[in-house]
Amino acid sequence: MQKKNSFKNKQNKIKDLLFQRVSLPRLRKPLLTGRKQNKKNNNQKGSKSKSCCLSGFRALAVVLLIIFVSLIAGFLAGTFSFVYFYLLENQEMITVEQDSDEGTAGYQAQTVTEDMIIRAVEESSPSVVSIIITKDMPVFEEYYSNPFGDLFSIPQYRQKGTEEQEIGGGTGFIISQSGMTLTNKHVVADEAAEYTILTNEGKRYPARVLARDPVQDLAFLEIDKEKLESENKEFSLEDFKPIRLGDSEELKMGQTVVAIGNALGEFRNTISVGVISGLGRTITASGEGLVETLEDVIQTDAAINRGNSGGPLLNLKGEVVGVNVAMAETAQNIGFSIPINRAKRDIEQLETIGEIIYPFLGVRYVMITPEIKEKQDLSVGHGALLMPADDGQSAIVPDSPADKSGLKEGDIILELNGKVVGLENSLVNLVQEYSPGDEIELKVLSEGEEKIVSLVLIRWPTE
Image (cartoon, rainbow, N blue to C red):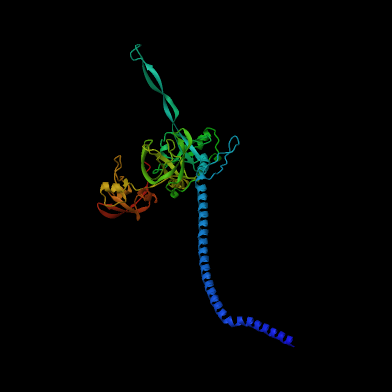
């Protein structure tokens, strides 16, 4: 019984101990819960801080990534653009296929520009011709006379008939399938001479002057079919390849051009390359007994030598943009060409009416420049100042429309039909917009007063 009681006592003690171990945590739970709550609050605050930091780092990373990607894209775009334009404009290797007698590979052009020059020359050369000028010249023989007996003889000369001789040459280019050839007027100025067209293939064709431009230094030749028939020579339209005509109004300063001509009258189809170095120039040219003022001409540094007169000035498309006309003898690499659009007017008239006609006003003048304004003490800075020519010819041509309208030396033509006369719009260019028989109005400054003068243009005199 005692044993059972003692066992129960021990069992109760164990229960008490278990109760205490289990209850102890329950008694301390509020205290522990408060600390954990504080810890939890602190953890939540820390989490919020960490979240804010993480958001800031992410935003910074995105910005840096955008900057990095932009730099890479800009670098790649710049590199691509540099390589593209460098190859295109400067060092792109282009293979030019050229047939040779041996059948070997042709020359490889080193740049795009060089390739374009080669192609322009190859396309245009068959249309460029040499113009040979021949004339019957007296032939002299030497003989001796003895006016003092047998003491001594005196050599003398006497004419022994005439002989056809080559006296000059120039250049031209074929503009129609029939063989019509454009050249300079001063090349074919001698009406007593005979002219022969010599093609690039070495074929010769007798030619005659079809028309001479009364204003511009331009002239046109055609094949003399009658002479060919008399010489029993065959003639085929397939022998001629017309050259392509461009638009001289589209020319730009610095543009590359190619001049082709019969240099020095000896070296056929000589090529020279340069750029457009000036536009709208006014020059006074002389040669072959002619002295003329050329307005609105093209200036180029492509070499234009003697014999090149009448040859084409080409753009890189192989189109004619000018007719080579003169060179500056006192300077190097300064040549001049007549804009091809001037010749187009003549070609159109030859095709429609068979002749070249111009309106005629009948004045001699100089365009007013800042230098002329200061030198002449003028009150205006633009216009055409009527004054005598250098050779003494009067400013007003007798019996001309200008003479009949009362214009006189010293007057300044300011406007023509409302268009201002100036360096960019010369008087001759404005007059050529009209035809003989057209009535025009001129605003004129005469003795300090402006007035309107009306007159009717006539046809340009042949003499």
